[in-house]
Image (cartoon, rainbow, N blue to C red; front, side, top):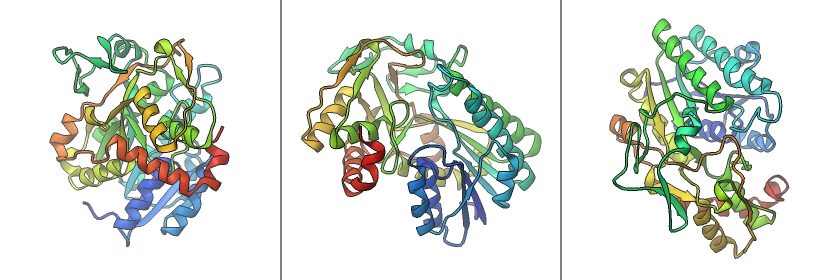
Length: 358
């Protein structure tokens, strides 16, 4: 990996940012690792002690303010993790914070990276792909989950998942639109200013220290409600709980970042779909059964059949491109990840139950 002297991670007190910062500092002892975060999301304050204990510097600031980024100091690598992460943001309220953070804020980050001549890894999202084409996939219910037939495929989709070739035409939510627009801006910065950059379109990221909510972090939310008590519901698509996502443990994401940065000159300008893939996917039905086994709890899961505007029934990441480019493969199975989440929820119950309980 390129020897970086100063790494800046925006959104660095969040789940992905804090875990990534701690891992970089552990592996690069002589590198200054700095995180910038506005601490808007409840639970991010818990990351501050962890970051300090591992020698990571923290700056309380907001990427909507370019001076805040500047005050964090010079850097030669930017990991851009900051975001309003909810795909439902803006549907029932003003989209101002969403747009100002995910687009304007990212523009400020890119400009500061240009001034520092820094490399960039931009963590984008699978939600850049439009909603209706994903809903139109030929899905059938099989053993409590939705599936695509083994003999069916189309442009950018197959039983292996959604690839980078999936068409981008159509609405995708303001969240997805701001992330896609940021991708386009980064592509132009890369070409115009010679910045080395990589874009990772991440699916569902999970693991300990994620403050899960209904719209972002469902793995942790599901486990926490089974352990601490509270209500859960199968939302949309008939309320059957058959919708499917692949998941990626945050440690597997960090392993990929290290591999990508080791060859950033050859990978610069490329876009990758990043997730657990077909082998590391789960339906809500299947997740419920796993949580019951770990908690001995039998929650009555409510059924709410109406589908919300931004919801999709099935998304599995086709990881062929990123695997071909780096030889990376995710290692944490669904079962191992669920077990680790439950151990974390149990060990830190006093801290976490007020945040993740009912």
